[in-house]
Length: 78
Image 1: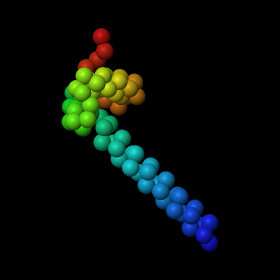
Image 2 (image 1 turned 45 degrees about the horizontal axis):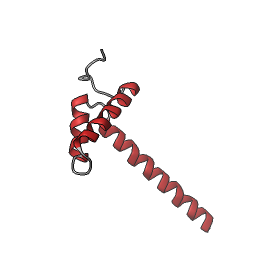
Image 3 (image 1 turned 135 degrees about the vertical axis):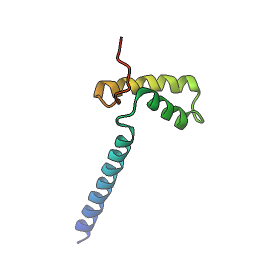
Image 4 (image 1 turned 60 degrees about the horizontal axis):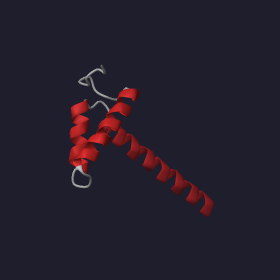
């Protein structure tokens, strides 16, 4: 009975993590490039220098563009 309880607990924790990750992903999906950069600056400016936040923003936007997660307002690459 203890093994069954532990298994249920592990399954519940994994399910909770999956639900949390999917909600966080949905929060960022479909944002335009300026919205992504603004959101990063609002969350990270207090912790990281703005130059590094810009570098992180470049990487995040490029990955989102590769995956097709950016919104329609995203400027096309030259």
